[in-house]
Length: 385
Image (tube, rainbow, N blue to C red; front, top):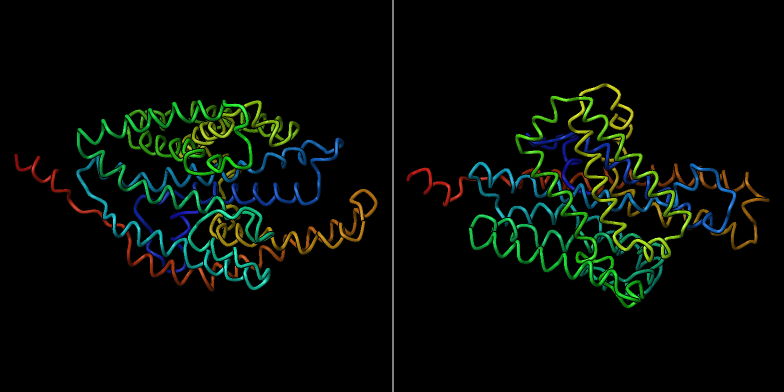
């Protein structure tokens, strides 16, 4: 849910634009949509699901992929600036983030208040997680709260990296986070509902860190060496995707809470696999990668933010009346299939309209406030010396 989708319809395309990442964002949103169908239809309660349907039970990995992409795309300009002696404007970074995230999110929150009449909805305007209190609208909002926490931290971490003392401070903070993260996630009862930090930046920082580490590697000579070896890139991509598929299957068969209880580092592992798949896809030059990066997926990536906020309410209002009437999936498969198809098309259409009418005007404004870099004072002094 970040910058690669800002390059259409008159928007300025950055020199570092990587089209494969737009398609990865398309995969991310499709996985999330499939995961929510899996939940709403109660497929986790069935033992006779075909393999492809069972895999949907691990589709919440799409959120992890969004986090990895954010870590990669947003840290890369800062890391490139550190390498080249350029300084990214923190003010323009925050301005760009505001126009990218806030207008559509606020529109979704206000719509949720109109539909539910729950005043707790206004709490979400401050990016405070409210869980399911404005169901079904608030289901995906938690991840945006986590994204905002990352936005607040990232520029200042990158600013500290410009100084020797700052690098030591960042290293100490990462070590402290790693120790606390592992300790808390292996403590008894860490999945209790009161442990809000599970889905906060503290709990999900591994995904952003994996993306940032991949961004740093993509700027290195080692990655240039990797790009010249197509077979190695292909094996990296396929190996990571197979690992992800196996992980999703186990996650779905175990159930979310049981899986996380058995493997507390689950989200960190899938983050590393997504990072490897991303690097392999970016480096691969073979045409076969068109199966994973193509115009259709690019389209879904472009409208992914709108689709992310829209699809759960559409799914719920289309499918819940059937469940409320006591119609089971087994006995009324045709009716459910028609509702699923209709809800998919409706979500798609509404997301496209939302992108064109709400997102795009602010993206055009954002394009004029891009995070241009300038020569950093410390780099100028070094050059003068």
